[in-house]
Length: 108
Image (cartoon, rainbow, N blue to C red):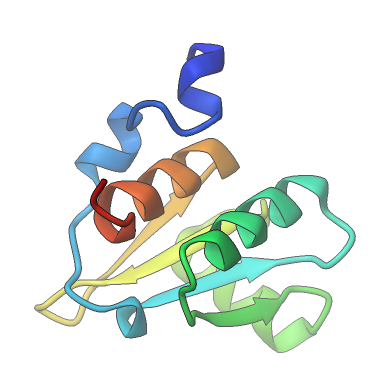
């Protein structure tokens, strides 16, 4: 990943491979308040003026849901609800930021 990708210049392969959704209502962000990578993703969410469901994994129920669905306890993690009802779990802050910008960024 280049420095250009980190600051939003291009979408990552993981972001491009993740399923597109039409509405941010199909997304949920699993995070911890103190996590600097989660804070970076939250900054992108604010930048794009998105309203996402957010779950703090300090809550055992939210951590359990993350582990059961995504298979890892790593945060941040973006849960993407697909049209067929299945979930796609996208990890890595740079990939999540790229995904959000790719699908919800304002056209220049």
